[in-house]
Length: 275
Picture 1 (tube, rainbow, N blue to C red):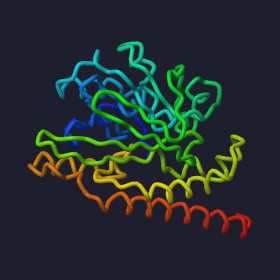
Picture 2: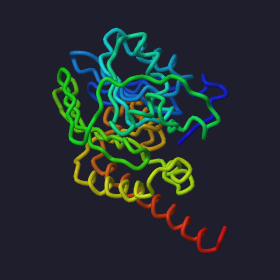
Picture 3: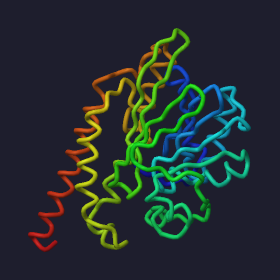
């Protein structure tokens, strides 16, 4: 889901604790999550360049220090997920990680940030410190993040799985798919950038593979994927476990596959009718 950021401040969302040592610090256009590992902070995605000041404000308002940011971990190389990274690195010295196949996008060597499609310009490119491969594990403090390569939305999209623990010692499993938008899997987009059409079937294969991952808490990299706004309101109303739903993950993956099927069927019909 993409937003036009004419009035950036209107995209602000109140930061909150999702569960245990996991927090939401993002905006309505693009989610960002913070993990307190006990040995430094990990930020999942940095959002658009224009909304970075909102993310920074949210981190501070939750009581965290920017100088404790150790790693910025990216779902994929689109502007709404990497936009604030270069400035954050310059501000905090945090390290960065992204799927290896998206490395040249964030370096500025491939025009695949989706900025053009959004009518935006982008020059906040950076050199990633760690290029992630399928099956890599990121370990920091109490946190171990399993990284699974799930291409489709981009060639280097990564999905992440990790445990979080609350103050009562209850440990639950978090899962997030790194990118599911059909916009960059449309035949016209892939052909325009010389990308392989097989990315659509690789995306499907990734969905099937992720069905084997058990997830207690599903978080999206866009708020509409898991009703972040609605669940945050429930948390503020006193429902601490608003995000805890072991059924949500599989339902989400099935919905993503249905969207892929609809897109492919519509493309086939357009080709058949010559439209």
